[in-house]
Image 1 (cartoon, one colour):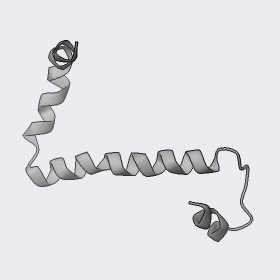
Image 2: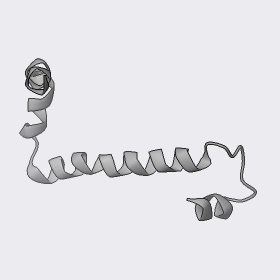
Image 3: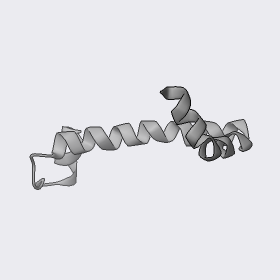
Image 4: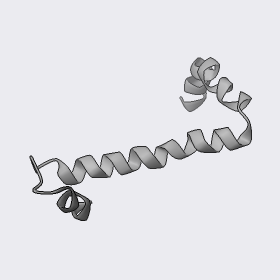
Length: 60
């Protein structure tokens, strides 16, 4: 099943390897940013507003 998925999407994956290693590492680390955003959404989901920017940052 996984092999089929890779084969069907190979044309979308291979351009990634054309980038230099330094650029690939930056692209790869966007997952960390996405993880932070997911955590932020999870924490703030039930809160509609914050009294200050500092209050929001403390919660995170």
